[in-house]
Image 1 (tube, one colour):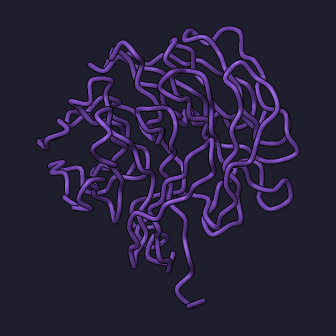
Image 2: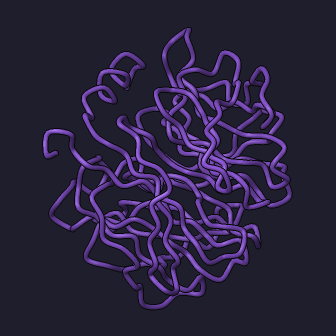
Length: 294
């Protein structure tokens, strides 16, 4: 998708956005803020003070204690999508930004306090999803030679390492605190949740459900994984569109039966990045409401 198509697609999403949290154990749901335009993909900072989200190509912080919203100065990165991740020490923010020269998504790193971004991935398209616990590598989904697979790269750039090569779409790679990588893949026909070692070995099918399951996010203590599930017949396996009835589901990180924690109208933008609170208890997410429905 080129940047102009992206802008038109975002504009066509004539939706109200609701920034929310839910306690995964009690089910208590809390509305933080409502927007009359599309916002996406909240991250929670390690100190529990802010949520980071994207809107209209820019990045913003929402201060939980006051409700204050501030733009993050990301320099030339003004066409960011919903793939953004904080460094383990929260001093930096990695983003996927559509570069001007060819309108293709590449990964950049910018200081969390703001500043000019630094290019990490020379090749595009590259869509960021994870930052290793030691702060040394990024994990991302990239299209190379017509195939989308999982890659990692040093935060300093350089050669990228391909971890998957199975036919179909492999997407959403995110590190767990123990250094493993969780991701989602269509290799079985439906989009399902998988886990592998950081070198790509021992790829293990962790969630087997009659649903299309996307974007596994591991809690800070490594005990739980939350993900978004579309109905089996509601979408193509390789698609995660907005404005669908979806579920957020929870499983133990060691595997086991899933539990639905919330049903909502959402999809793309709801839970693209890790949004666990530092205390391992709460998830931040975005739900949507079509404007023409009042």
